[in-house]
Length: 343
Image (cartoon, rainbow, N blue to C red; front, side, top):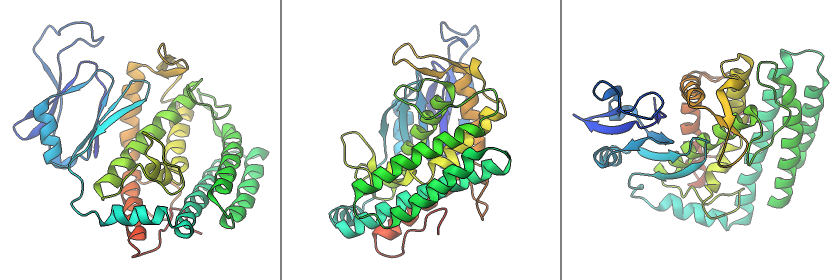
């Protein structure tokens, strides 16, 4: 359990005898005190955690916060609709060499473009792998074959792209083709008609957006812990409040991890339309309180198991850490970055 997700309204993360304890003193609807004393939800030893994610109206005490910082555990806050609010991280790595090399590489147009090409090519290969797996279980659907051909053609163009704007154009076209085909893979209780966001208009898009936010934040924490500046990317431009480097690293991971997870829980009807409601603040839809609990229970289990479709047995959690390490070695000039679906 590298990440502890605290979703219970009114829950409090506390320090207790060297452990992190989550308690709640409200009723299940969050409207009043429990008839009994404070109820303990879970107790975890800090060495088991890398991140504590506070969802909605959960709280953390100052003693627990200090303990997290001492133990190298980050704390992140999210709204219930999945919007990321902010993150508190332990002291950065004492060595600044990686950040210095990162900044130098950003201004080296040749090396920066090379890495941006690697990220986009890796994303296209992961999309091809995802659609190929979906097609194997659904014969007679031409959408998969057409999109796979499109992606393979764009893959050749990406490897010869002369600048980042051209790369981003290929990426946008590839995403449109990929999601149009992916819609044919949804055959459970939650349909998907195409990618839409800000706000997500339907349950499938709400799940995709939520999963991407969680992954980007986790990668930003991993990168920061290794000495990177997660807000300075090679493919994504620098923008206030945007973890561009984490988004770079997300590109090859979003399809085999988040999209696969969403497709799985929708087709197995582990989440259904009753687990969603209209978001009164931002429009669109979001998970209900019970739906949120179910989402994180399923997400934690998925992230801890070997990821299907790979040649090796490795969980998504381990995969994210490994790719962050590979990027650090690449930037330091020690070893070329190797994507998940390498050519």
